[in-house]
Length: 252
Image (cartoon, rainbow, N blue to C red; front, side, top):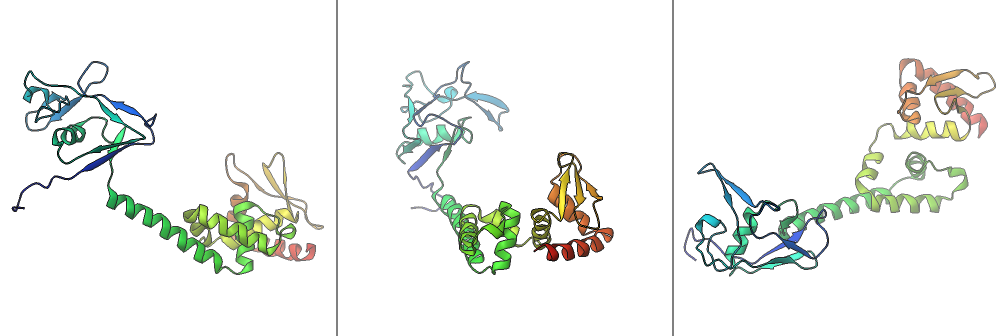
């Protein structure tokens, strides 16, 4: 092949997830119902598109009066166009539904995206398998709000592995969260009723022998557990955290 010569290849196109059904007839000529126009940057004009296999150009203004318009049908969500049908490939390139109703299949890009997903899943599963039981318990409390006193270690490890496989990005983010232990501890405070909700979860109260006062108010729309965790990281909350941990040990 000479240098600079265009390489003609077979191409495959697929319907996007928003396009249905799997069998789809693509508009092939400009009309009021389906305007098929392409803005030509060179001339500054909108040019009408029309697919005719016996014409070299996809633009109506470059076609002769013998244009034979043919249907374009996606079967089972796909359309294969051989390298010998350059008129159709060019028409699909300029088609206004390209990118919304259909896209060209990029095998290399698809493979890279699938590899990224698989690698993320593998990384998450390796991380999950290496967790110590206390880390597994912390994750179970935070992710599933699990009462670990009623769940075996095997069940917890299984559930964490399944979650890591199904939601690897969310799992890895949770594992690396520096507040994981604190968030887990907050769940323990509530499960052992060292802290309790009142007023339809608008307020959090101490529930110890020496303290029944309100600790914090939960702003509308906020996650109460994260509000409590945030408070316990404040200057005022550090001593409160020690107090709650002491009472938690007494209740276990």
